[in-house]
Length: 107
Image 1 (cartoon, helix red, strand yellow):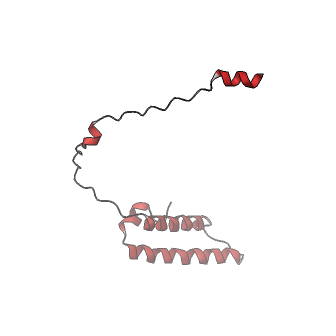
Image 2 (tube, helix red, strand yellow):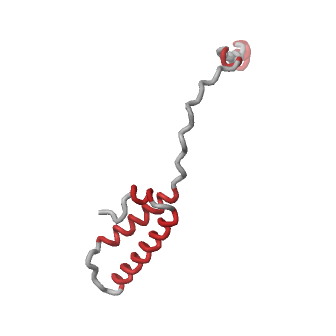
Image 3 (spheres, helix red, strand yellow):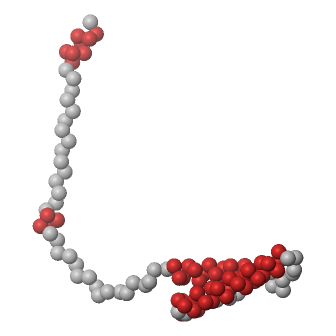
């Protein structure tokens, strides 16, 4: 079960998120030092939960602000140049070598 759900994180203010983030980080450091010292934890999965919650908070903080929906845009009127269909340019024909030049080389 997550410590903080995404909805709860989004509902809190930026300052509260930062405060909660620092609290979670200090708890994570405390648990990691306890494990390194050879102690046992009551709930070893707590470390995983803390890391995930810290990541959620940082992700939500880095999200761009939601864009407010504007009134529907009016369809653009086509410009004069857009009304006319564009014609494809024809590629120039390749020049063929005369057969006589080939015959001279063979002799």
